[in-house]
Image (cartoon, rainbow, N blue to C red; front, side, top):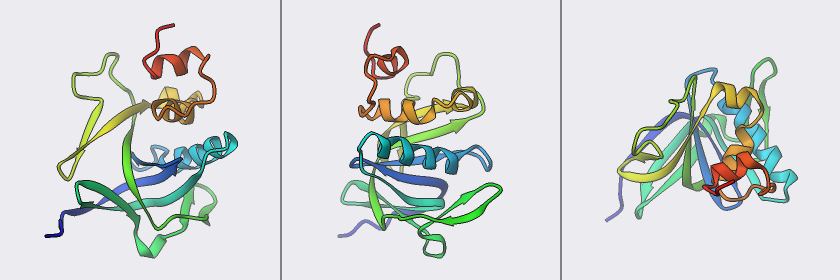
Length: 166
């Protein structure tokens, strides 16, 4: 019997390599900016990268996995503040592999379990990026490192995010 659980999230979604990444945050937090930065950073490293959705992401549970799709009214478009809606090549859907939450401030030491997010009863790895980290331009590098696709394994920040001792 097919699973019918679904929701619409105020988020952005990109594919990096084979991993669907859901980017959540308050309005104006920088979800679209991070999505564009991730697509550019991954592409410049020779990785496949594409937009799936911006602003409204439809998420459905299917066969124990989470499938993300764009809302049809805004498929293939991404909002860039000051420029409006821009057309961008996009995929119709992807399987979610990770959640990135954009926060104003992240706790100094994350609580136990904070590295996971549950959506529709499915547990996914979660990364929380605070505003200072994103303002320093480290958001894309942090996400790519968490996915294990960083191109600078010698970088101490990347090594730390991947759990490698200095």
